[in-house]
Length: 277
Image (cartoon, rainbow, N blue to C red):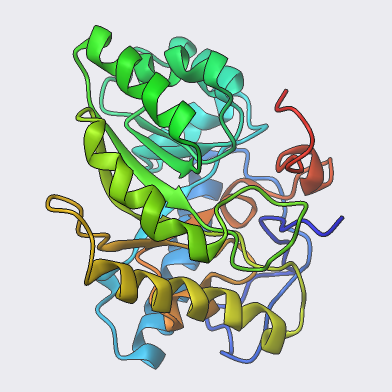
């Protein structure tokens, strides 16, 4: 099963060539200074990619991903300036939210597959959900959010690599799905999200990002009122420069900030036939 890790890198350079997708190891960040240095390096990489693409770096939001990182290290990263965190597993994210509730300006984005029975947790604490691909989940989130008196930014997940192992809508199903979303008033549709093919071959990775951008451009012309699909969430630690070159407005970066993870990424990105733990 091919899965997309938030890829590794040896000694991350300040400038990543547009023809490379890097997969190497990152050292663990264990101090505020480590986190500040890693954030500076990632932002330099974002700036360089934007320069190559003729884009304003302010048009790209960095979403640090803290999955498997304990609350104490998350707190250190907060003191290095991080205020928005991405998490794959809802229960892990909720536990960290509870542990760090003395940091009221720290916001949470759920970026992994969501089962309907966990929608109540997302409705309670998350500011953003990036993996919407089910109307049943949309309905349950809307119901729970209404009860909480909250709203939620959402991204529609698209399977741009055509891998049966991945969650996300087939591109051809996206228009009808998005047309149904105005019925859920507590959901604010912001854009599309994808996981690219995991490969060091740019010729295989880039088309996933191109496909999402082109689909978004087509859908925007026919999107319902109130849905502008301005955002594209795509790219991780090893390939986010490539994603920026193809129009990413949100990049999800974990290991380049926190350090490499001990377990393979298939543990964090379950297949479409596996249950989320």
